[in-house]
Length: 399
Image 1 (cartoon, rainbow, N blue to C red):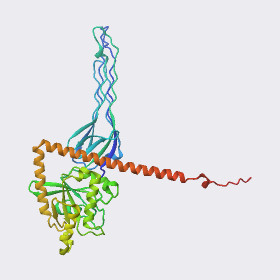
Image 2 (image 1 turned 120 degrees about the vertical axis):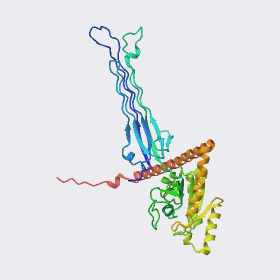
Image 3 (image 1 turned 90 degrees about the vertical axis):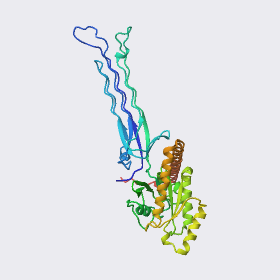
Image 4 (image 1 turned 45 degrees about the horizontal axis):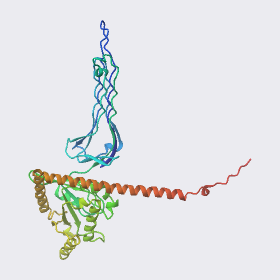
């Protein structure tokens, strides 16, 4: 199935049914009085998170969705049927944004969680509602109100405890293959990973965490180069980032330069995301001569002015990965306990996630606006170059 993590849709709630104008007619009863019933409410549109889904491809081709309209009221005080709500299934981890106001309406982060995005119209009133001691034969009714409508943007972000950050061929996919049962593509050329991959790392019995591997980022990724601008957002929900650095690069970029590029692009995409807890993982140490290993590792640490946790591993052979996974599990357990016990910690985590989401959307919107401006400028330039005289044709009429 094709991986689609963004989709724009139009949703409209159902209109409320109109009230009925009716009077009771029965043999031997001359003036039975009003008996017009109310209409039914219009159906609403609801988004529901479904753990069985992992893509928004269904909404790439079907963009318009409308709930049922409420039925009109009937005589004998019969109320019209309510329009059925329209429930749209989306993957867990979907953010819902109003495209017209750029307002984030909500996040669906748990299986079965629901979010009402547009409210159905209110029902109209039948003439029975208007009878009184002074108005015994009312002819007033009201129409049902229109349902709400919205243009929505759906953004799916993978849910994982740990996210992998690094340049192409840093060994991220190899790391996931080494520590989990996931089998992402691995090859000796850049950008073998084109979509995010998830792997479940089982540390001990009943202890595991999820790792997310995103496509490698290159210099300029935050401005749209490569695949970075599209997939950096998938690091938003990760609690810890693992920054993998290739200690035996295949090109002229040194490990220190590669490490700085990744950090710079992360911070440019979102300053808040750049402040997220990050561990440095120096990979492919088995491919570095023993007498050069310490010097290369220290060059990366010095270039980043690194003070955080540092690990040296060889993902392909598994060297050092067990220690790293055990430490990750311990740290994630500490974070989980803290979030369960402290409301302040939960509020701070939520505020950070919202801020990262906001900064990421602003960066993506800036990139798209720049591309539109460049396309418009290019079109205008092509129009200026067009000269009607260049296409004049001499026509000779023969009788």
